[in-house]
Image (tube, rainbow, N blue to C red; front, top):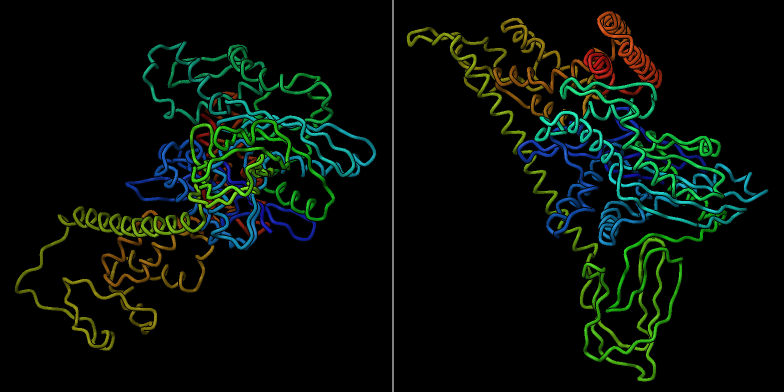
Length: 624
């Protein structure tokens, strides 16, 4: 069983083995898998870490206003789920955490996407994932006396507060609130402060300096006696100035905490910015990993509820759902519940179940009344916002449903096939353009062959069968792996060192020496290299950035001790030229790199990330 937290910028995966949960690392050794996509001329690349050209499909699905836009984001989610399945070899059973305040159609689409990819899939409200995880960790304590547990979760675009009463085997949700601001608002707030100090920034694009703003935001919130300078903005912000505006957000969160709360947890990256008063520090328990709690909590919820060790009584903040003009569900309603309603629907009329914005969920036609004396319907709904209507005194025909698994799956499959074809064509176009550019740059230095120049052929015994001998001014055919090794040796002796390196690389790839150092896009390029039979094109492909990155990853991983010493020496030189304040950041960064590299080498993982960690650019960024 797999637990999935598909967040706005990262995904966390956890697995359940027996009664133990653990977080899954991807093929690169990372726990947090980026859920963003980078677009380059409509070419789609998952797991992008670019801050300039990426787009986020989870947040955009929730804010999409038109069906085509919703379907576009669903296609990206569908593709990302398939990408995860192939990259991490996900099992066929999955539980996914989702915010209870997500819109109805978002939940329906996510549910359909999961069911299309897995044999068993279930959505679990995120606040219940947190409650289950805490219930599990304090199980012995709450058998003796009740406790009231609460958490604050600051996400990128919103903040959530929830509280629960826990005693013995019972978990009761007492409060669930959503505040319409998140850590992205804190970034915007800091940038607006810079604009007030420097009016010339009025038309400046904040995204150009977003990484600097995020670093400054963290520094200002954690160090009360500091100030931060923005060289690009010609602005200096003091801690007291920052907190004056930050308190406007923080106070709204702190006001949510009830006076009888005994345990408090802070979750989400933005929650690390909160400066808690002493009274709240006393009840802050820090028992859960703020990044992994949802993925693991979904598994714990399944484990405890399936074994009937936890009984949940819940309420949720939901959109109101209407049947005609009658409100069926709404904010802060307890569930599960069943309600009998008296109705008087006319025969042959159309009855719609919809949201307040007129989004139609289902539609029925009333064919016949079974009784004309107070006809009734029974409405049942649960924590997944699933509403079932029993027209007990009517004969009805369902005429419309907003989302069906088959319709959505057919649309997503078609869109995914189109995108994959687009990806393949785009990659081919990039390679062709790169080949043309390199040919043009080399053209002036290549001598033109004379018309009466004698032909020089390769020895006959090394010529491929049924093919003419190759002239000197033509590129010889690159031999397949099955041909004699002497051919490769002849090529190495007769051509430049780059061809020799390319041939050695190809042989090492075929022997599996580079397998751990390649992601999906790398494998596509390597396949192209292995199938290339033109010598000049082979050298051009070998010199592409993708292939050279693969070679560098292996070199850095194998020689990690030497590379780490070089990084430390570079950092020492850097610290001699920076202030004491920046020196602390460099020292902290190098320590983190050493810990991560040692961890990866010890576990035999991290083949795709060690080279990036050992790059000296990280030291430069830390010093900024």
